[in-house]
Every structure is written in structure tokens, then in C-alpha cells.
Image 1 (cartoon, one colour):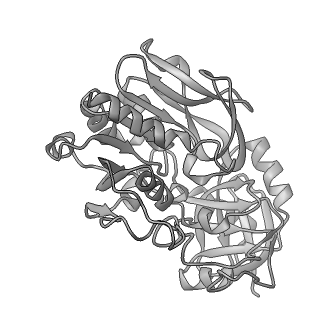
Image 2: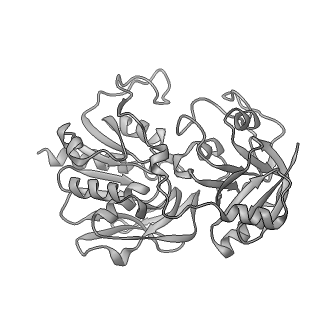
Image 3: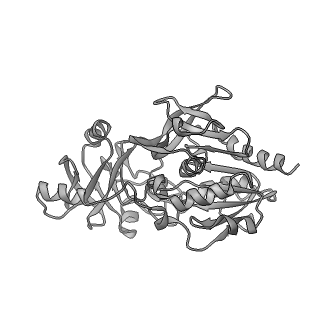
Length: 374
């Protein structure tokens, strides 16, 4: 393996071995604390523009399979590991992680101290960085990391669908169910805004009884309403929600017209559409063990999360209720309007870390649609 470095904008440098592509990779460096799920992390569009470091020490031991993709290809700008597993062992595996990174031209680095990196990011906050195997001085590598822009950039335009489409139109494929189980007929039609939507969200919506039409991020409210859907879903996605002024406007025009449900970036866009704002977290919430309390029931769910921004609760109007709180830092994890038919959560119920703690949210969406039609 060729030697490589991970250099951060503040001059912090770690040396290791290059994996995958040898091209330089620039991005905002963040860490994910999940023990498994590296394939889902790699293919999650919410990571566009980021270099992701996995805190679990050995990555790649169960390989890569065709079923666990969250999008059609990897989305991360770069990938960081303590150790790339020298062996792959799983009956579902089709190729190794190293082969997958090479095939998709993703730059990665291993044999670095991910514990030191994580502690540094927790202290300093998320920082811009670069993975490179080029022979650069420490100063040149630091300056290269500084050249990357993240906040205020619209990464959604890079990951949203170019053409609108029906997901699983026949209701019989792409749902990761055993062949002996068939899906029930869809009861409701939902339009889903693709800000970087994960495939498992689409699967969960379909299992909950929705026929889903996926539309691009800049689709106008008028175009959505011409289809007369039963409900509107707002997906997860990457980057700074403040930059998505067109999405704020379109969602503002749709609120109150149809029942609405948002996840992650969709939750933040709803907040902006209602007059609220967001702020950047120091190092974000990324992992599969974030405790969230439902303030209406008192129940606590273990959730999967991937976001670097949070809704500022003091910016929300009085008619908006904060429904969920993160028990680690008391940030907003969910909201609902007191009179209009909309709700949202910051975390990812489709990722199933509980594993079923948050499944009820898709059923709640169905119930809200059902009640709106009575």
C-alpha cells in the first residue's frame, strides 16, 4: 500500500496507508460511532461533501453486498479507518470493501489513530480536511484542506434525482423482504421530495402502505399539488439547510395543503418554512446510539442519526411544538404544528438501530393521512 496522510485545516496531520482511489479527497471531516453499517454510511447521500471517519477499529469484515445500498453509488468524499479488515466473511458479500472503493473511485486511508482524530474533532469541532498520497509539505496539505467549502454550499443539487419516478411501482421488488412475504396493496399516494433520499426510507414508506412518487428537490409546490397526492414527504439530505431557500419556499407553499412528514434535512426545511432557523453543531450527531425522548409519551428511543445542523428551538413560532429531545445535548429531535397536519423528526427511523423503536413514525404518517380524508 502507498503512504497517505489525512491533514486538517488547523494543521493536525495523521499518517497512514492509502486505500481505494489515489486521487486527493477534500471534505468536511466528521466521525461516525456505529459499530456496523459502513456500507450504508458510504452510500448515504447525507454524507455528500464529507470525509467520514469510523470510530469502530476494524471496518470491512463482512464485505459489500448489493442489497444494503442507500443510493446507487457511494456518496462520501473520503473514508477513514483504523484498520481495513484483511478478511471478508459473509454469505451476502459480493466484493470486498477495498474492491468497492477502487471500483467507485473513492479515496480512503487506514492505519491511522482514529481515537486521536475523534478526540481532536470533539474538541475543535468538525474541520475541513484532505486525504492525499501526494508528496506535500505539512503546510501545503493544511492549505489544501482550507480550500474546501462546506457551509452555505448546496450539496442537495448534486444528489437529487434528475427525473421524477415512481418507487417500486408494482409493489413487488426492491423491498428487501423475503420472497415468501408479499407487500400489501398501497393505500395512499405520497409525493416524496428527494433532497438525498435513502432507499430504505422508500422501502419503509412502501411497507407502510404508500405508493411513492419521488420528485427532484426544486419541484414547485404547484407541480406537486397538480398530482393531488394524499401526503407529502420530505427526505434527508446533505449540507447546510440555510442554503436551500428554494426548498423553504416550496414547502412553505405546501404546508396546510396536505399532511406532511419530514426526516432529518426535511425536518430542518420544515423549520425554515415555518419561520425557524438552524445552527451548526460542534461535531454533529452521527451514529446508531443516540437517545431521544418523546416528550408526549415519555418514551426513550435509541436512534440512528447523521446531521451536522440542528433546529434552534427558540426560533420556532408558538404554534410549533417541540416533540422530541436529544438526551445527550437537549437539541430538538422532532416537531409538530399544533393546528396544521405536519410533523418531523431529526433522526432516521428507517435505519432501525433500536431496532424497531421508531418504526411507528411511518404508521403515524398513514394515520394522519387517513384522518385528513374523513
